[in-house]
Image (cartoon, rainbow, N blue to C red; front, side, top):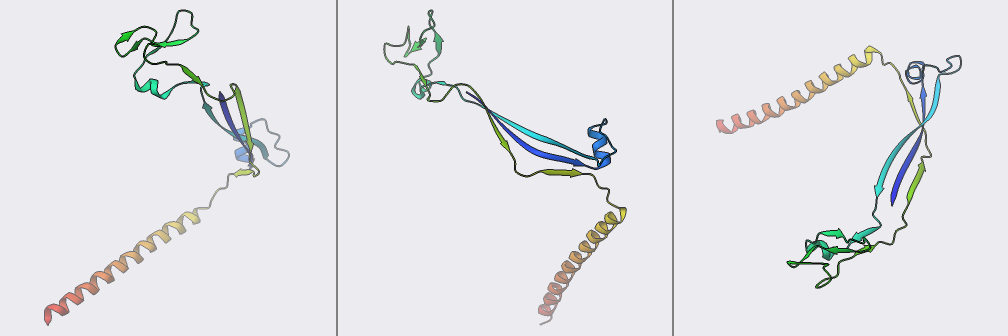
Length: 158
């Protein structure tokens, strides 16, 4: 059984630059909005026949007979032959429906992707805020170290 899980996300690309990159033939006379879908695929395979767990524990090698109608072990407990002498080994059929299945899931929300340029002042403000935060933390560490040194010096004077 082959299962394919397909997830579809409605997506809209907004903005002249991003739409030109994706579709050079897009008509730019109207609003630059390209509506499309993104999809994600996951696949899963499940065999319809499986070997019984006890057969794998015995280390049995399964090979097809000459008439290819049944499977038998080539070695069982040091004996060669069909393997039905001491233990019957067969493939068991699982209760699943064989076939190829496509499972679709369309998300109820849409994603809008746009490209905006951020001014240089935003970068400068973020850098200054980071530097200010570092100075504040270093000030706290300095005050903790100074207060512990004062307490030590007061204890040593007594």
